Amino acid sequence: MPVADEVLVARALEGDVVAFEELVVRYQRPVYAVCYRMLGQKEDAEDLAQEVFLTVYEKLNYFDLARVFAPWLYRIAVNCCLSRLRKNRKVVFVNFDDGIYTEPDIASGHQDNPVLALERLEQKEAIEQSLMELPDSYRMVLVLRYQLDLTNQEIASMLGITRENVEVRIHRARKALRKVLASPTRGGWSYELPASH
Amino acid sequence: MNCQQVTKLLERYDEGELPTQISTQVESHLHHCAGCQTMLRLVEKERVSLQSTDDIPALNPDFAQGVMSRISVTPRPKLYPLVPVWVEWTRRYPTLLGAAAVILLFLFPLIGQPTINNEFVPPTQQAAKKVAAVNQMQNVPYNATILPLTETSDENSYRDETLRPLDPSRSLQAKVITGSSALPSSPSTPTAALATGNAATDQTDDTQVIAPTVVPSYIPTGYTLDKIEITSGNQVIVSYQTSKDQPTAPLIINIVPELSNKKLMLEKDTTTRTDQPVIKAEDNVKPPVLATSVRSLTEPTKVAPVVGSCGGYNYLITSNIPLESQEMENLSRSLELR
Image (spheres, one colour):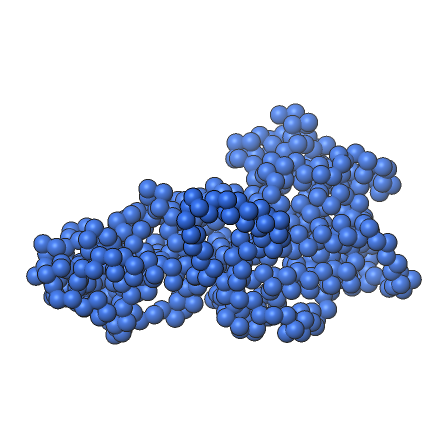
């Protein structure tokens, strides 16, 4: 059985850097996934994920060892994401990599049926794009629910909102996404969402 | 159910979150409604897409190394928050400090010389200090005797203590017997009558049983109670498993004077709205959750627990009596509930 996260935190607090590295390895993917889903760019997401782990390290002594580590880590990740998004809105970035477009490997996943593969790829792109068009608070709820597999209750306590509020946000966000999936023409669906708060 | 009602429930139906009765109603509607079936397929497709991570570009393989190299130039976190909360506040709001100083200046003649203790004391040390203070205050010589943990509530059962597995329906008891002031004084080296109770049997008149009991009254959804242990390090450890098959943080409690004769109850944490259980003691006594003792899970300390009582006070006496493995087994019983 692997060593519990909280034991690793206790070791890290005693100066065991390897223990902290183990925590980074354990959680790098989910944290990066959240960052990517929120920011939509690989470089930004990696940079932010690093910032999350640095913040975690700096604030490790505030972690209550009697509690579970993962929700605490995700809460920091959520805060870092929201803070970065607020900052990004004030600055306009020019992405120099935009011109370098690599053709997605459609055939690799579905060698037998390239039409299906193309359809799926288009669908994923549509989902990804639609997610990015959602208000931050709605997108965050969806990411926590489906990428991190957290319960509505866990999300509620993480974001400091009620569980009912989480349910409403998920329902509205999914309703909006469904319209995109149902009609590839994408007709003004983002206007049907209430304003983010 | 009509289509409109069913459509509203499809997400929860797809994720298996509906109560059985409603789920059956939805199912029966789906059997004869092609439109809702199409909608369900769409909902499923959408969920799968949301859960998918295929479109996320691969993480740089050197990511962890990158983090660690940045951490190498970051100051190491301290074991406890170095700066007490009030110091942080005064740093953040210096005017607050000024205002407080002015108020204190005016109140000074009224309240006398204030004593401000700047030193941050970890909880374990606080408990130890308290014990020492009570000890000194009472100034009563004592002789503490430990008996093995036992499943019975019979106060005299220590005489025929045997190594029987504990009955899950009964609560664990740490039985401790203290001597009276008539006994020889030995505050620095409490005597331990391990497994036999020989020293205590003659002193039954002054017997006081301190029984921190653990009652699993609440098991959160998705959690399975793994085991409850009372370790030789004066701790109660409650371990859980979750349905997600992830390791969970065990609840660790230090047996301190305030907990003597109190029932410990596992309850749902109503403050954070999570399913994580918390431990509460009866009469609203807050059990000190020990933060630094996680390591003791893997490396149990071979030190006898001594909970003492004298002059109406129950308190903890730390002792350095090393124990043999058999004695450890006597003292640290596991309650397997699986």
